[in-house]
Length: 326
Image 1 (cartoon, helix red, strand yellow):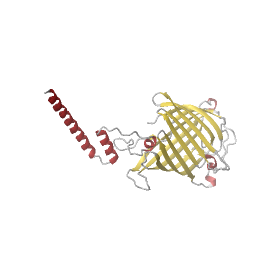
Image 2 (cartoon, one colour):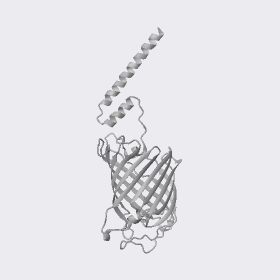
Image 3 (cartoon, helix red, strand yellow):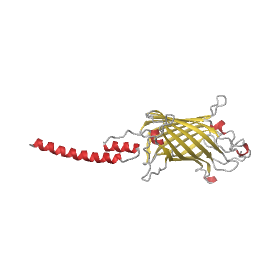
Image 4 (cartoon, helix red, strand yellow):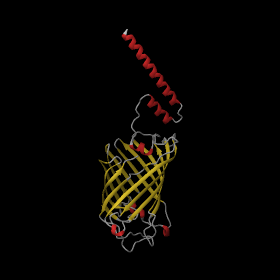
């Protein structure tokens, strides 16, 4: 008798659960977007979605990004956001350029110790989620902005000036391959970069670039090559810029642990007989500072640490914080 009662009670619970599941499934069937509909089915069936990889999250390759209730995209990270105190072996007190009236004659009273910070964000402004074009599965259009600033914070005797600020707005088109591993994306981009200064310290350029992204487990790689849009010589602040800032770069990200990240950036002018380049190493250590940042070390060497330093060689070592992605 007890067994019969328990069996009947279990059947009642299962029927109620099945009714709830059916209601959830019916609600999912009304969702138009297939990605959102599949996610709804997964949640209704208590199937935990696979974790999104780094490049998938960074470029929303699966369409599960962060629009709000009105479908408007929020700002999200582009490049790393950080603040550092650093030392340079060779501060650039007399910036020069082959362009007329673009060379400083009286040395600036700069110190070798300064602070450096970077703010970088992007937002999706358009997409085509169901694309079948040359093997690509989707397309997204982004607007991005990056600012780097070099502040002589400890140069109190000279009013702690900002030695250099670089501003870089971009428009980026992202083609997603749909691959879980290996080649994940192709970016087509337009970039304008300038320091917003007058002669003789004015520096700027425009470029078009191609960038590929590859990913394998805890490592991902991006490679980018660019073509500088020509300018007329009288208006060109830095006609030999690509000789020093290069024509291509490779960025390798390694995530050995959950709260540990190593980034290596290599830039080159691709000239075997007159090679000039730049190396930057960043290590975001597991040591956390509050809830929003962690300890970061940065080492750089070569040409083009900033626009004003595009033809100036130096080595720097910095320590500070890198802010977590939001």
